[in-house]
Length: 70
Image (tube, rainbow, N blue to C red; front, side, top):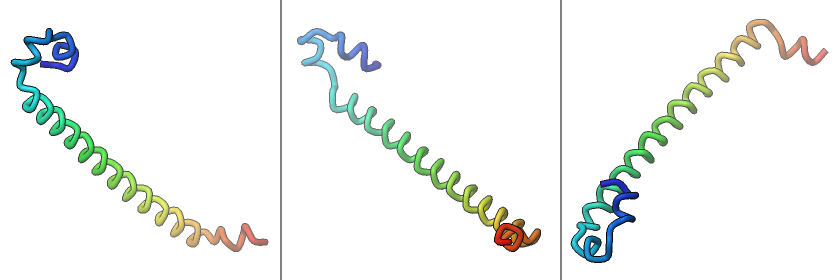
């Protein structure tokens, strides 16, 4: 049951509704989203680090630091 359906329940229906199960399921979903976002950030950070290293190596190879200085 989605949150909109739960919010529409009457007081007697809410008294019978298994809120613990509902919130356990909700919490598991939030944990899953948080985990995937953490993995995504780690992967993106790795790609940025690799790209920065590659750019730095290329700059050294074509001697950009000396060309920029003078």
